[in-house]
Length: 192
Image 1: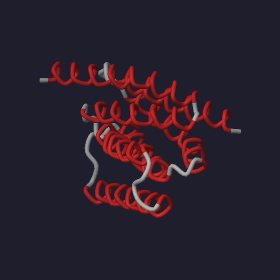
Image 2: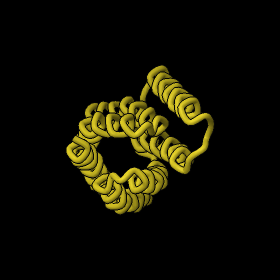
Image 3: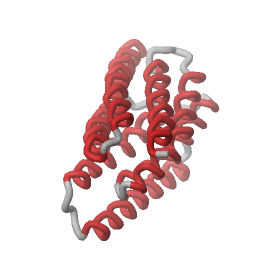
C-alpha cells in the first residue's frame, strides 16, 4: 500500500509542478494552470495518508491545509481572475494558520517538544509549502522559490522515512520549481 500511495501522491504532485511550470511561459495559461491545480488536488489524499502513517504531523497538516490554496488556484484559473475578494482571501489565510498551529501542536505533544530532525525539516516544509502555494495561486513568482525550499526539506524527510519514490519525485520536482521561477520572472519582465 505504501508504494501505491507514493506513486499516486508523487505522480499527482510532480505532474502539477510540470503543468504549472509550463504555464508560466504562456500568455494564455488558463488550461495549463487548471490542470496543474487539479493534479495537486488529485495527489493530495495520498500525501496526507502517507504523512499521517509516519506521524509526520506538521507536514500532514500542511498538506491538508494546502487544499484551499489549490482550489483557489483552480478557481482563479477557471474564472480568469487575478485577484480574489478579501473575505475569501482572509478565510484561506485563517484556515492555513489554524492547520499549521494544529499540526505543530500535535507534533510537539506527540514527541514532547521539537526533538527530531524530521520536525525541524517539517517547519521548513510548512513555511515553503503553504506560503508558496498561496503565492503561486496569486501568480507571484516568489512562490516558486518557497516551493524549492519546501521540496528540499521534504526530500530529506522522505529519505529519512525510506520513501525513496517520493524522495526522487521531490528531487525531480525541484527542477520544475526552478524552471517555473525563471519562466515567471521572464514573463513579468515582458509585461513591464
